[in-house]
Amino acid sequence: MIARFAVSSRRMLTSALILFLVVGGGCATGQRRVALQKRLDSLVAQPIDEAVKLWGAADATQQMTDGAIVYTWRLPWTSESVNYGVPGGAVVPHQHLCRITLQTDSAGTIRSYHYEDC
Image 1 (tube, rainbow, N blue to C red):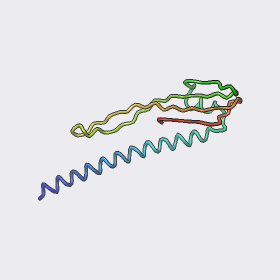
Image 2: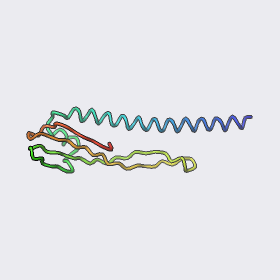
Image 3: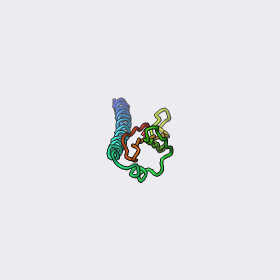
Image 4: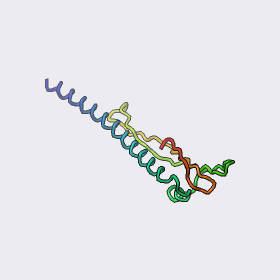
């Protein structure tokens, strides 16, 4: 009977740990996205120089026919997950490439943005 309790407790503990890691990892990613969203919202109506101060020179620029310019930054980042297929679990890194695109008007004022994988 004690052995059954120990096995049952271990399974519950393992399940709770998996749930914590899945939910906790999602929260960290969600918090990162909320912080980025707030940062980008604060840049709208600001000069493009404010974005350059944050991330350095853009990786690419594209001049539009209406005088607007589209700036793109590619920012690598790493997340981690746990592989439970390996006894004891193993931390597995995942490489990402955050792409942030800002569009300015002809005067260099940020008018809109888009981001993905951030």
